[in-house]
Image (cartoon, rainbow, N blue to C red; front, side):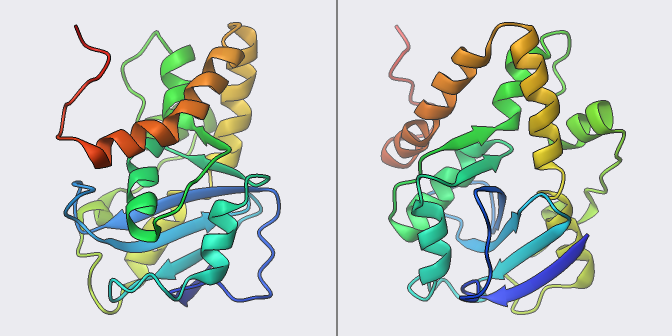
Length: 204
């Protein structure tokens, strides 16, 4: 894995292609309160583009926003519900054409309740992820090499996981259901931003 670190935006000459894996690091897990600190993007070829936000200034991210808003570009997440909410909240944009490996896993790996990225990488790819830096200070003005390596590892395997999960979705006859869930996911994120925690419009 090769990391490329930038501040606030990706350069004009970076070509992300038609399918990108995305993850975010924030100050916490409340999308209303905790600001975006880092975005990780992988094209599935071993490169990871890290965009650092030492300050909550999201007006300088023209190229990044263009990539996120490009409906022709597939965006692969793990637990996209949170990442999408963070991105929508930060950049005030709409994001479509998404895929979530956690949703896919829950649809087809019904024999287990372990659907974290760490478990997926271990079970489907035989890769062990080190999660030591997960709860470190992502709002620091300078991120450590350990943080950057951790951040990159959270996206570099998503394309491979998608390939494995797609095969299972086809095998179990649940691909169309998965696509419907992915299409709804940005709206689920918008609901998270609009209403209080645990508000469920589908409940009785």
